[in-house]
Length: 128
Image 1 (spheres, rainbow, N blue to C red):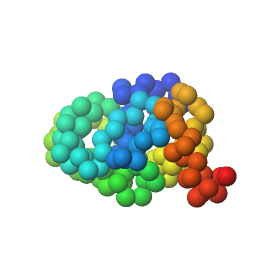
Image 2: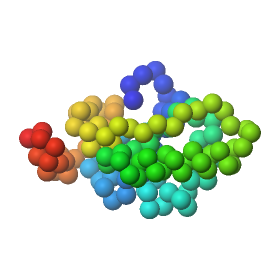
Image 3: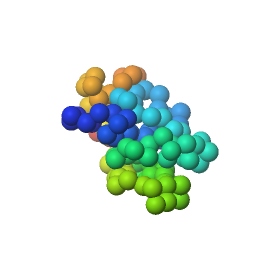
């Protein structure tokens, strides 16, 4: 995210990809694999209760990202009942797959990007 906002203070990007996180990720994102999300969501809520914006995503943001965002929001409501601050929970449209096609060369946005991981994906989405 490009702005004057500070990662992990003003916003947190939560990446719920599992093994498919290999090949790159959004800089400063927190990886909480979907397979472990339920076990760790309470901790995430407590650690992010002062953060006004949470952005969830997975590879395509069609299943895992939206599901994690919903679970997070429900859990936050239960844990912080009455003590919550105004906040926003959003989904990164089209997930990391599209994000990396647009920003793979932007070192301030993407870390550990690997061409060999994504080259087959480019052909799949028509970016050869």
